[in-house]
Length: 388
Image (cartoon, rainbow, N blue to C red; front, side, top):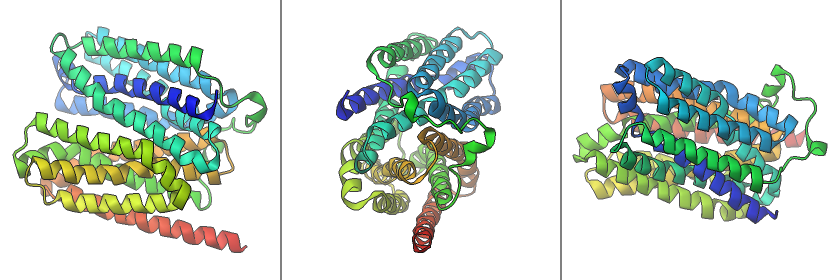
């Protein structure tokens, strides 16, 4: 299959994976509450999934360097299907926790493997385009998934979980019968079977890019956890309006990731895209402070989303170009740093929001400034290495 066709298939695969994931978002809190979950237990239910991904994403990424991308992608998506089915039939809270833990362990394979797949099939000058398409697919899945879940949850709380399981099963068939392995045996790394080797990508100047992504993830997760409360207090917006705002932001981000980041990276390089994305994110955080109605909320959050949305694909592309270890290893470790940020971001954002409603966005801007400075350090280190 030619690159364009494979990227199109990958797009639909990741879109279906994340639409299935998004379907359960609006209903899981109510479903867990019906099973007796307290607010604290609900928080743990959400966090345990990200924690499993933090641990297992590098393992799956490394394993894809050893046995190929397609088998790992099949494991990850089928694991999602089983976890959704287990949630659908859960009649106690412990079953819900088991399903979330199981799903977190296996679904941790999906994002790093898809990113490694995109890196395998694209030339270096097209790498950001491939990563952007993966990002656009996941973003659109998160946009449409919750809408579908909200509609069907009115019928029965368990129905969205069955739909998500069915969506994942259909995606497995798409991978099995349409997608061709991108990493044949002759290209696979034979030295990535030790635990220490998972950290081989975390060396030299590239270490800075992983830390940069962590700061970006913390700032985004803090915003996501508090924005609904902020918009309600500052602009009097209702939950439905806030949902529309996030949908507009997601669409703007997906359009930029899918259609703009590739040409920009090809012309200016990933480094310029990362810096521009961070600067736009900082501006977005600053503008959010002046939100006073639906229109300003939608515009300011979309500006932030466009800036934030280009950073991860550009960082992924740059790492796969510059690192000497397996691409699955790199993308798995990057997903792990992303998950760590998503674990720390929500409670941190909630804590500082309780002190002052503007603090999550001021601190988000500050963390983004730190990320921008980190990239300048990365550039200096690269120049120093080149001299010697």
